Length: 263
Ligand SMILES: NC(=O)c1ccc[n+]([C@@H]2O[C@H](COP(=O)([O-])OP(=O)(O)OC[C@H]3O[C@@H](n4cnc5c(N)ncnc54)[C@H](OP(=O)(O)O)[C@@H]3O)[C@@H](O)[C@H]2O)c1
Image 1 (cartoon, rainbow, N blue to C red):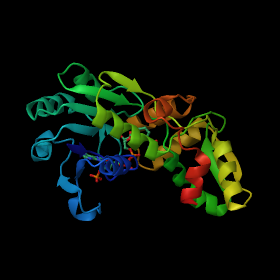
Image 2: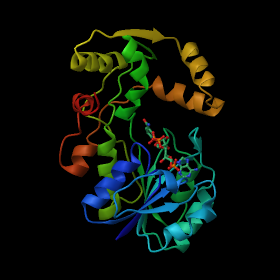
Image 3: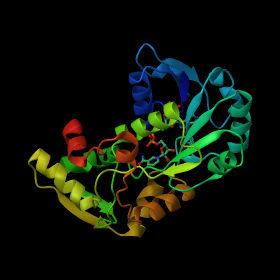
C-alpha cells in the first residue's frame, strides 16, 4: 500500500515515514523543498504545499492513507484549506487519514469530520524533542522556562510515528481521537533534573512569568495566534494515557531514554 506523509521532514513525520517503511509499506514524503531533504532511497519525495491544495494532486495518486498536518507555514499557522483537502482526498479515493492536531480542533479536523474520508485524530502532548530548545541555555547551566510546575506526560516522537503508522495501516480507528502521551507526567523542572543527571551537571531552573514568556514568543517572531495557543497549551497539565500501550502493545518510551538518545 502507498501512504503519503505530510510533515515528513518534521519531528514526528520522519518517524511516521520510518515506521511505515519498517512495516513494508510504500511511502511518499511531502515537502515544500524536495532538493533539500534526505530520506532512505525507497522513499518517493514529492513537492507540495498544504496551503495550496492543488499542488497535492500528483502526490495523492494511488495513495491509500495520509498522515496530515493541520498547520502550514513556518509559524504553525492553522490550515484553512480543510474543505479543499477533503474534496481532493475523496476525488483521489484516499481511504483514511490520520490528522495530527495542533493542540485544538480546528478547521481541517472539522472539514474531515463532515466529509466522506475515514479519519482518526492524533492528539499528542508535547514532543520530547521540544526540550532541544533549551540547548543553548543548558550550555550556560541555567534554563528559563514558564509554568515550571505544570505536569505534562511528554511523548517521544517515535511513539507518535508508531501510532500514526498503526492507525493508517490497520484501519478500524475511524472517528476516534487518541491522546498520545509518554508514560508519566513530568514538570519542566523534572525534565531539566533528568538532563542534569545524565550530563552529571548542576542545571539551574528559573521560572518565567507568563507575561515574560509571551514577550519572548513575540520577540521570536511568533504571531499573536500562536502566542495564545502556546500560553493556553503550556499552562494546562496533560496527564498520561494508555493510548500507546493500547495500540502498540508496549509501554511508551520514557523521557530518560530520549535523553540518552540525544545527550
Ligand atoms: N512539537 C510538539 O510538541 C507538537 C505537539 C503536538 C502537535 N504538534 C503538531 O505537529 C506538527 C508538526 O510539528 P513539528 O514540531 O514536528 O514541526 P517541525 O519539526 O518544525 O516540522 C514542521 C513540518 O511541517 C511541514 N510544513 C510546514 N508548512 C507546510 C506547508 N505549508 N505545506 C506542507 N508542509 C508544511 C514541514 O515540511 P517542509 O519544511 O519539509 O515543507 C515540516 O515537515 C504541527 O502541526 C504541530 O502543531 C506538535
